Image 1 (cartoon, rainbow, N blue to C red):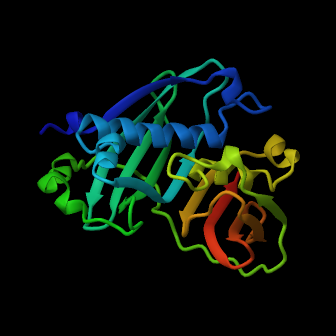
Image 2 (image 1 turned 30 degrees about the vertical axis):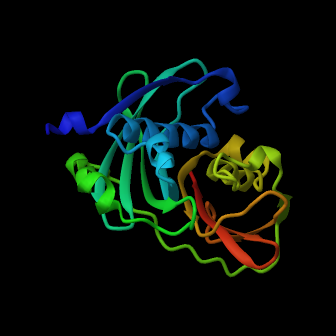
Length: 247
């Protein structure tokens, strides 16, 4: 199969309700578009969410790293490319490129996904999916950003709390991965986004949280522009770790 046929390209417009007070696309909306593109690409190739659900399986996002030179402005068109870099028995690496209205690459993203049983919540064997046909779509396209790193937060004094509510819950019954992004960025003051922009953003999803869970946020500053964040549910289990680097 030709390499270009292994890459999915999807077009978008930065709608007014998709941008923040600076007039640029928000990280939450970008994250949502990335996940949608992953879904479009998988569906077009026979291993999408709907087909998996019929057999009691679903995709879950494990890690996400985004690195940006810029973001689209309000009303600007842009596109996202996505492709599968590696497939292992329990995980698959999926990459993305974000292109501006002129077709220039303004960012990249790396993600790691697992397929789990919706009945047992345990990982499934990806190489058994359609007889391993997912490997037919492996692509050598470059993604020149670092893979998600290890995040460890030592801070034990919380910076914020949030109780998971209706708008946080997705079709799988747990807190939506993009909602965590929004809650994490809400820990920073407006001035942080007025004076600087996000250069790199990482998420590591450790466990699921559900409606009514109390989410407690711990933030540790590693440098002038670098922060590690940890989210615990009900004062015990870690559910998410994140790194935010501003420039």
